[in-house]
Image 1 (cartoon, rainbow, N blue to C red):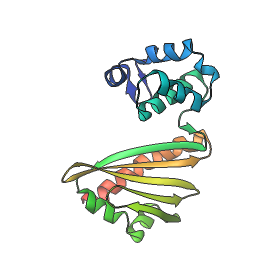
Image 2: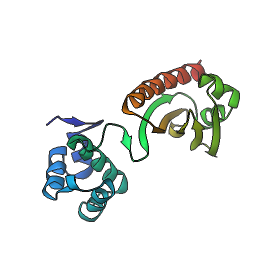
Image 3: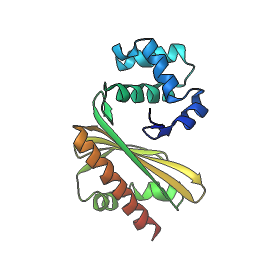
Image 4: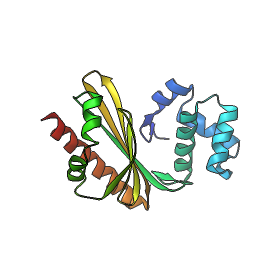
Length: 180
């Protein structure tokens, strides 16, 4: 079995949860979780593992991918991808720039978008390219921000892979434009 599943190594998951990937998969297999729905596997973990909600989802998603029950990036309502980049500017500055509709339209290649929600210095949610887009802002220190983009409701695994690469490029471009 590979040392790493998704972006999380055996060492990292064991450090965070007390079990490595083979141990988690053995526990889930012994309880016939491969026959359960996503929600049922999460409920099993909630009741039997002591994991918080995030780790319940992470272990469930990774297990489903390992068993061929779910494709990479697949969610119940389509596919989801994310990418992140650190920018050497305060959260307030980056957040305000991404509320500037002219700047965002140029950054997103003129694609039509509609901001649905903006939580000051935390996140922006928008409709974009027939999908849901969320931009999250995490202060790394007073002068550095991690920007994370999640795009949901993508239809098809090939398109999801393309979108993942697109967002990596877009975040690199954003970093360059804001830091120059």
